[in-house]
Image 1 (tube, rainbow, N blue to C red):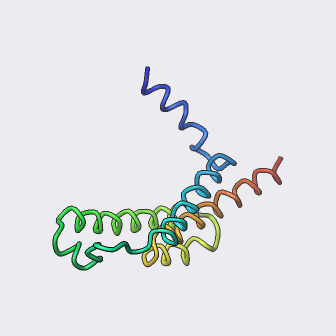
Image 2: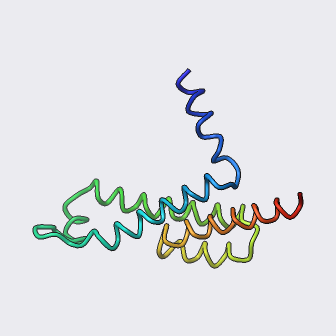
Length: 118
């Protein structure tokens, strides 16, 4: 029962639409806010020291690279606009800062094409 409810709730994100654009926008806003507001605090080790001391941090750092690579591949293979290749390349360097806007743009174009077809 819980699985079916979860699948039903996620259905609105399956295809390009306003809900998915809101999701991309919210994720991007949180990403930017975290980057701007998440300044270094006193007592922090810093990136290099953290990566040297924590195997969990190293694994998460590698995971971010893997997810960015998968996102870039998804964008190249499934994207329909000319933005997909430059955005995929940018994703490999700046991650979600490039991927989220590119996915939102792909959805926005798909929504415009759908509206003009009707």
